[in-house]
Image 1 (cartoon, rainbow, N blue to C red):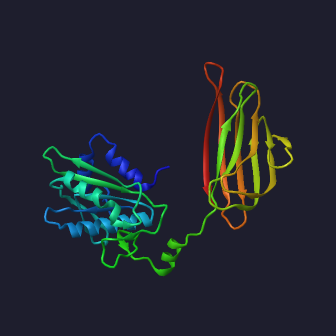
Image 2 (cartoon, one colour):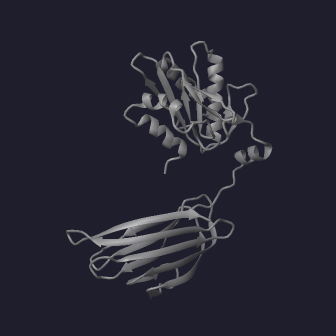
Image 3 (cartoon, rainbow, N blue to C red):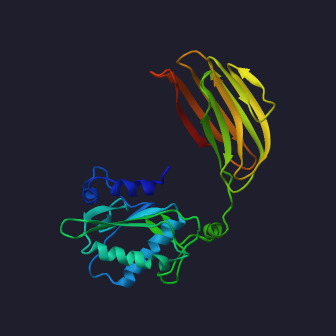
Length: 311
C-alpha cells in the first residue's frame, strides 16, 4: 500500500490535467495545508542557486528521515490565524525544465548519504511556465544530513516544519532497533471437492519471533479446520485452538491453518480470526471474512476481505 505522500504525488501526476489539479488547490473547499508529508515552495526568478540548493537539501533530508513527503514548487503557502501554512496562490515557475535540471543535478550532493528513489516531475502550462512535483520516499538508510545547509544538520519533519531532532531521536536514527514484523498470506487450493484455503504466516521483519503462539477462532456452517503447526488435529464447526510454534526466523514461511469448505454448490462462507502472539512484540490479528459462490461455469470463485492490524 502506498504511503500518504506517494498517494498524493500519484493523484497529482496521474490525472488527466496535472496543472489544473495544482492550480485548483487554492480554491479547494477544505484548505490545503502543509504538514508532515506535504510542502509548497515558491520558486521566484531571482532566487539564488545557493538558496535553492539549501531549500532542496533541507527538504530532502527532513522527508527522507521521517515518513517521506511531496514538495510542490510554484505554489505559495502562507500562515493563517490557526498558525497553519495553507495554499494561498499560484506562482508558476518561469522555466520548470531548467529548474528541474538543477534539482536533479544537485540530488546526489544535497544529502549525505544521497536519498534514493526521489522522483522529480516538471508540469508545464501552455505558455511554458509551470510547476515541479517532487516525491521523496522515506529512506531505508537514515539518517541523512543536509549538506547545503549551514552546519550540515540532520533534520526531520514535524508538522509543517523541518527541524533538528532531539538527541534521543537522533540516537534512534543512528541506531535503529530492529522490529518484528509478521504478515498473513492466503492461497487457494483445488476447489474440485469444495473450497480449500491455506493460511501462511511470514516473518517479513529483521528479527526472530520468540515464543510464538498461534490462536485460531473460526466459525462456518460446514467446514473442516486443520491446524498445521500443532498435531494436525481437525475440527468441525466452531473451533478455538492455541498452538505453540516457538522461534520463527526472518524470511521464514510457516503454513498455520487449512480451511476446507463443504461440498454443497454455493453460498458457503466462513469467518476466521488468526492471532499471532510473540514475546516482546505487538500481537498480529488477521480477521478474514471468506465467501464463495458458484459462477456460470460451475467453478468456485473466492472473495476474501482480509483485515490485518496490529494491536
